[in-house]
Image (tube, rainbow, N blue to C red; front, side):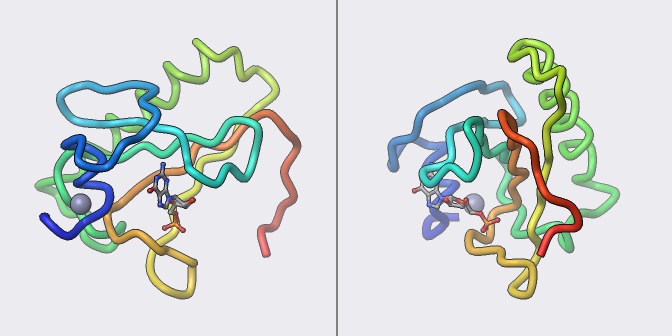
Length: 113
Ligand code: 5GP
Ligand code: ZN
C-alpha cells in the first residue's frame, strides 16, 4: 500500500532501526518506546488490522509469535515480556498495518487501562 507508513518502512522509503527480518516479517524499534525494549513486529504483506486476519493469511501471525519466542531467548527475557495488538480506534490503533508490540525490560500493570 503506497500510503501506508509501515509498508514504507518495509521497503526502506522511511528509515527504521531494524532488529530482524525474514521473508514474512520485519521487526524494528518503536520510535516512541513505552519500555526499555519496545519492538514492532509486522507482516511484509499489508494487512490493516486483526479484524482482517483470515484462514488465508493467519499463518503470518503464528510466524510472528515464533519470531517473538526466538527474540525473547536471544534477548534473555526470562523475567517476562508483554505482546500487544491494538485493533481499531477504541484500542488506540494509530497505524493501520497490523503490528504486534513486544515490550520488555520493566514490570507492567494489569489490567491495562
Ligand atoms: P498503535 O498505536 O497503532 O498500536 O502503534 C503504533 C506504533 O507505531 C506507536 O507505538 C508509535 O510510536 C509507532 N510509530 C509511529 N510512527 C512511527 C515511525 O515512523 N517509526 C517507528 N519506528 N515507529 C513509529
Ligand atoms: Zn502497510
